[in-house]
Length: 363
Image (cartoon, rainbow, N blue to C red; front, side, top):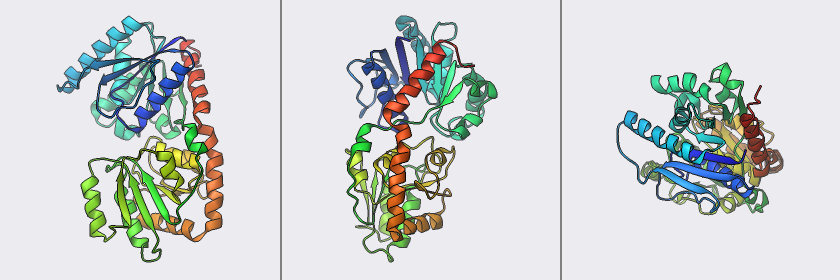
């Protein structure tokens, strides 16, 4: 394996995009010839290594019907594969996965797709369900993040797949924790999926018992005004703050007394993994498709709560605030357990799996 091509719609600042750009940079630094393809360019992109050759199928996003969009991008991606002749094409997310498979039919390019979210959401609807059940198994390999996601797909796809966690950069393991007492932190896009409303409501319920309690919400998104209104409605202005995009996530996490993830569904949360790597005692919803459950052993290196359960969330926060010894033990266990997804460990898993795909040795 000498040449690797990566393909995703955009590299705007989101979880899957961060994983792919970091992975591409690692392969480039390791001496591989790396090509990175996006469907189009956007503002606020992740930076790519200068060693990586970058293409976009469209200079700016072309607005057209779903059928025309997919046909156009498949043909352009196929032309690029013929031109660059990569040993393997790696795609992330629903539509890019499908396009990568179709674009490489009849070519000598191995195709590896990756499922980055709950398949019940990512492959919802008749067309996408058909893609997931019948077209994705045509790939030469697939990388899942969780066992639950893997089980959604046909056995013939499972047999040639592997499970690889997201990687966390070394800066999160090295940062020194200086927690601010009773400071809760969450990091994530301001969206219905992340359900920050649940956390706001739980903190509002606890405020009378914990006068020093604070919540900082880092992230941007479509629900900013709605969340601000809820904060004001609950009388939590000055207690709960929307901090916008965090420019130094390791530093923000190092200040956290507790980290909370309230998602209704997730692939595998980068924010939760980073909090564990820093050693922040963490509470997470046990949401589909099982990422939190794979990262947290309940009450040992974190706390799992049911999705959407405000009372359970409030009790979990209270449990950590009232038990400093337990909180310290969970912190230590979290940092220790996070070693399994350090970036070097995860990179070697990707490298080993891709070599097997190239050699068609997945049996």
